[in-house]
Length: 600
Image 1 (cartoon, rainbow, N blue to C red):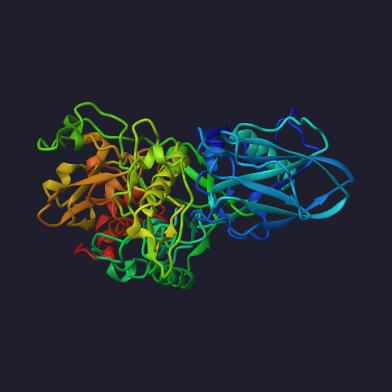
Image 2: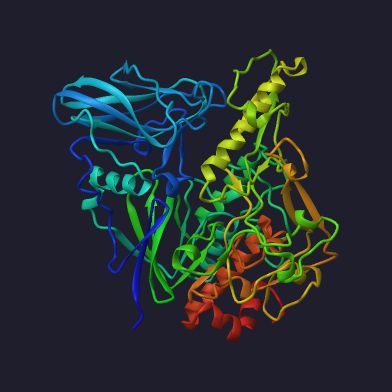
């Protein structure tokens, strides 16, 4: 008998149960008689941004004062206090860059126009900072967040307590359950919807997969954790789409970008095109939803749970087929599928490049991967401007004086995991950016230069890679092997990055690319686009089945979109014949290839 498992990821840890979980309740030992105000529920966010990237790592979707050195407009909302009297205030926040300097992300809290004395964002780590005591009558009150610096202050929640020393949750898992309980969500039943296909991840690969499946009449849900679609190509990250369209030009052109400079504001026009085409499709779109777990029976996924980042409400999506387009391989990871992270030993798949040695492929396998970028740029102004001193950024920026950052503004470190340490990685790049610009402003030639745009969503290149029946490697590219189940094609170089610090540079936030020519088209097999362990899970994008070097060529977005098209069409055949992706690859591959545009 196959075992039914419900896997809910709480605070980065998987919690397995035999019955379907609704919302999580908090430990009875935690204080629960106060009033919780979650930052994500603020009615008017002002200039604060809702940052959803690190929900699994820190337990919330927080507001970020992303002002590029200029304090942002207040965020405001109302809170209802149930009884008159003294209330003790606690704020879940952090000093994101502790050291021998004033905390960069400082802010104040005001209630009914009265600014509380403490300055928040000054204590290390995600924790509850005391806000003092205030006397409040019962009823509605206005709460305002007042940014002081414009340098990435952040807040997850405010708690109003009748107790002076309440026992508050500390770990992300405790925080998630406690929030569900105090918000009243723990009393609710999770809403369930049924689809033929669920695609998780709304980047280029996820959009392409959903469009291809919907084109074939499949009822498909697309779950995306941000308000916009496109992933690294979105207006939030602004990387132009590289690679060829293969056999799927007409579909991919609906969602791709022009070749603007990375970080260019003209990416917004491409975002509008992508959003318009996705909204005009038959795809059921669920933006602002974070996948948080799944249900499986044996080696088959039954449903995926996703939480609305603004309300905290959970939806359950049941389907026959699932496609992991998360980039980080979350569905594969949660379901127990085999995956890889890091670089294989050169000898495992014969991926050595003697000229570059360890920079290309190590003798011994390691955990090094390509890194995350935060793009940024500046503009010329008619009048001179100043920029604040940023002593907290100097240890990272050193003497750098850049006024913009391209793709090679990239950070990876052997001691930092691209998923588990994602917030620290993004923040490290903030320090590099602001430190460089502060140095640049000290040069007379830059007196009329001001920051124009800095991303706050990191553009990640590599993390988990879910293993399929075929592991795509450098040899497949160099030999230009044409597989019987070829479904994707590309011709760009194998492009792998290393951090310049590996060759002695003092700037650990800059990378260099190594390009290995391919001399023509190379091909990806369908066997690399489904999990070898989970019967109804496919993957498209950078979490497909490959080695580190094998990822180097096809990891760019148009190629990832081709993977999406292949898996979307494959899902339609899985549903039509009531079979697994593996069976499609064995018994129906000619039909799939013909759908894509190949001669059968």
